[in-house]
Length: 331
Figure 1 (cartoon, rainbow, N blue to C red):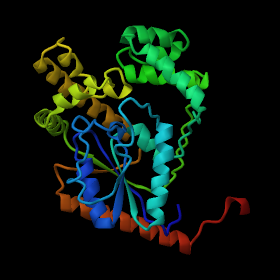
Figure 2 (figure 1 turned 60 degrees about the horizontal axis):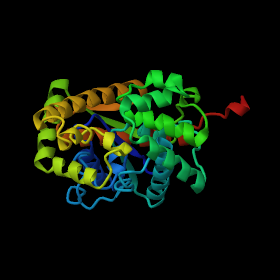
Figure 3 (figure 1 turned 180 degrees about the horizontal axis):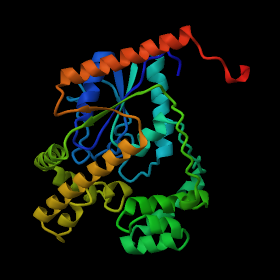
């Protein structure tokens, strides 16, 4: 991206860390628009369980990549990348700052880096056949579905736990679309940056984060999460890939009368905490993040630090323009 373009900002962190609020504050300060990078917030009708930002909370800031899919749609990181890149290009063209905010590591990585994906585009007729096959598999329980995957892709089946229905379905869908095994796909990591992005991460002690997550689950339930899940089940979305999301899969058994609400809530809190831990591991291992500690820094201190980092990058760009490095072809 040319240095004269606005520097894209990315706000990442584990679930419950306050990414959305910081993203909106940054958009207000720097004249930005939000590009959402949360895989589950793209589904319509799944608002409370995904902690989707409300219209009031948006403070008039445009948000993109929210409510773009029905609950029964499948969506890949490749498709996300294609759509999000168009928004970033348009936001930048209008002189605004793209602010990428979310917690889905693969989505963020695919967008910020030159991440290699295969084009999974297929014709409408072929897509109908794929959807028909996936529909036929919906009645299978997790173990049977996992056995079906193992029948043609043993490596993927070995890597994916049977209870991770979403990933099992993803591996099956990939095979149905491409006739290739997900396990044999080349996973070439190209760490060339697509954008000169300032990547900001929100962190805090594990104890504080877990307390925030537990409290947030209680708030979601108070706001009507159970009714939201029940409504989705009544609409026939119970077997959809999106319903394997944390906050939804735990409450379906309550609706079916299989477990108590108390037991489901405990599972929901536990799964949320485990997910937050996995997110932090991903971000710290795979990305170059400038971390800000929410316990030690006020919002103003965070904004000041981010402003300092942006100015530092602008100065570096100016230096590069004044003293360009020689082309390797000239050496």
